[in-house]
Length: 377
Image 1 (cartoon, rainbow, N blue to C red):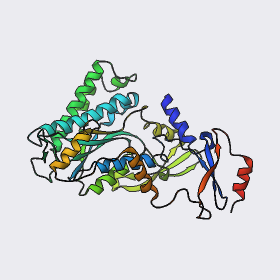
Image 2 (cartoon, one colour; image 1 turned 120 degrees about the vertical axis):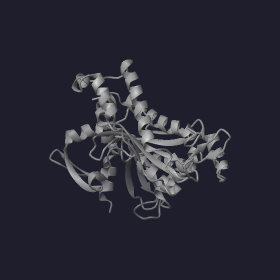
Image 3 (cartoon, one colour; image 1 turned 90 degrees about the vertical axis):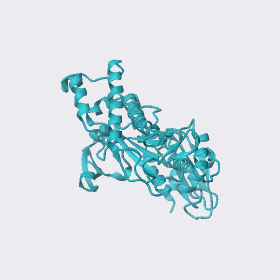
C-alpha cells in the first residue's frame, strides 16, 4: 500500500481523538466541562471539510455572473481504470486537460462563440458502490469575453447548449488518445505486467479504445445563480463516502447505502467485506497535493482579478470587489452556525465556554477531569 494511503487512513482513524490532542473547556458561569479533540483536517475525511467547503462556495458565489450556466461531465472508458490506479497523477491530469481543450477549442471557434471561455472543474473518481469511475464535472458559463472586452453569447442563441455533443465527444476522445499514445511512446506510464497482452497487444488495445463510445454527458442549464452554488456545494468537497451512507458494521461486513441509477436512483444497500471496503476507499485517495478543483479560462487565478470586472461591465452588472480570505472565513462560519454562539455553554445557556486545560498529543485528559465530566448531569 502506498505511503500516502497509509497516511490518510491513519489520519481518519485518529480524527477527533486524544491521539491528536485537544483542550478542555469550562463554562464561566456554571463550571460545566467539555472535552474537544482536534480534527485531522485531511481532505479525504468526511468530518473535516465544513469550513473549507463554505469558504470555497462563498468564493464561487463572489465570482458568479448573471448568465446561464451549463453542467458537462467528461468520463473515460472503464478499460483505462487500471492505468489510473498505477498512474493517478498523469491520468487525471490528462482527463482535466482533455476536457478543458474540448471546451476551449469549441469556444474559440467563431461558429459557436468566438471568445475566451471559463470553467470550474471538479474531479470525482468514484461510483455509488465505491468502484473506480474517474470523471470531471464542469460548470461552464453561457458565453465568453472577446478580445474587445465584450460578452459574446453562443451564436446559436442564448438558451441553446454551447456546442454539439457529438463534436465534443470526437474532440475529447481524439485529444485524450493522442496524448495517451505519446505517453506510451515516451514510457512515462507505469504499466502492470500482462495488461497489454490481456487486450491482444498495444495496437488492438488502442483500436478498442477508439471504437468505444466516450461519454460526454450534458445536463439542462441552471436557471438561477443560486442553483449553481447549491450544486457546487454538493460536489466540491465531497469524499468517496460519508458517514451517513455507512449503515452498519458487523462481523467483518460493512453495509453501505447507494443509489441505483439504472432504476431511477432508488436507494439500496450492499454488504461489503471490511478489507474490500478499505480497498475501494483507497482507490479514491488522491496523490499528495493534487488539485482536484480547478478554475480555468477567465476564472483562473491568473485572470479573474481583471477578467471578472470586464465581464461584469460588459453584462452591465455592478458588484463590489472580491472578498478577502479573512472575509470569506468569517462569512463561512456564519453560514455554518447561523446566529448560534458556538462558545455558549450547552448546560446553562448563559455562560461562555473558555479553555481551561490543553491536552497534548497521545495524552488522555486528567483523571479528575474525566470524573467530573462523568458526574455531570
